[in-house]
Structures are given as structure tokens and as C-alpha cells.
Length: 192
Image 1: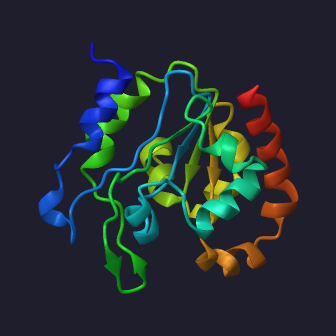
Image 2 (image 1 turned 60 degrees about the horizontal axis):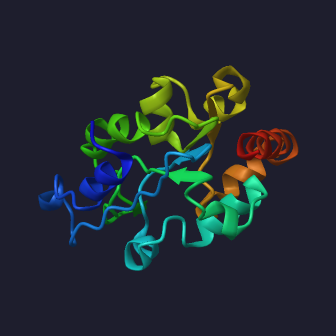
């Protein structure tokens, strides 16, 4: 069985969906066999595509604030693994970035996950990750996040931390008052 290092090398060289991207593929994934927290988001944005650093944008700043962890901890792949639903920036749509490419998760996720034996908690950020891992096609993102207890101890469902989600956060004050408090406790425990 190939090591995680080998699988990550193959994933970073992937060209599976190259014909469906508006630019050269640049797969973004970060992990170590010792990682204890796994973050599964949507897909890299344009800034992350340029830098090659996952969550290297305003969304990442907010996510680190939600988790109450420093950049140093966040980018330590022996503690935190980062694997989006789509490894490459999918391009722009009419109302924001396009959805993650559908090829990535079925092709790569099981290969990476099987080599992450120490994961204590997986954060499912946004509807694409939540639908893929929780199979809740009939629930809204709000319903899924509000039912965060139902997915523990394995998963913790979160909205996307994008600045575009300001309206959602204002409309759902329970998220910051209740959910973030528990999220921070569980992240701290997972990283111990």
C-alpha cells in the first residue's frame, strides 16, 4: 500500500479534471499521518490557487478565529490535515466560485483518509462536504449546522467562513453563541 507521502505526491500531480478547469490545475491538500484534526472544505479560491497555501484568505482568517488556533498550529500538518472536496480552484461563476469539481472526492478522499489513522475530529465546512459525508441531501445547511450534535464525535458541520456569509451569521446568532463555544472545546481536545 502506498504511503501517505506517495498518495499526496500523486494527488498534487493530478490532472483528472484539467479539461474542466479555466486554468492549469494546482491541487491543494495538506496532511501527515499524525494529524488529529481534519478540515474538509469546498475548494480553493483564486487567492489560494495563486499562493498554493490552503485557507490563505479572509475565509481562512475567520476559520482560524472560529477554531481559536494560531496560524502556526493551523499550518502544522502533523496536527491539522486539510483536504477540500475539490483540490483545485474551479473558477468563477455568476454568484461566486463554481462548485468543487466532482471528480476529486470520489477519487482521492478514501486514499488520503485511510492513511490518517490519528484523526479525532473532522470539520465539514459547507454544503458540499456535508452532503458527501453526511448524505443529507434534503437538509439545508442551516439545519445541518444546527444539528451539529447529531454528527459527533466524528464530524462537526460548519457553514463556510467566507465574508460573503455575513448575512447568514447575522440571521443565525445561535451559531456564534452556542456552536463556536463547543467547536473550540472539541478542537482543543482533538489537538491534545
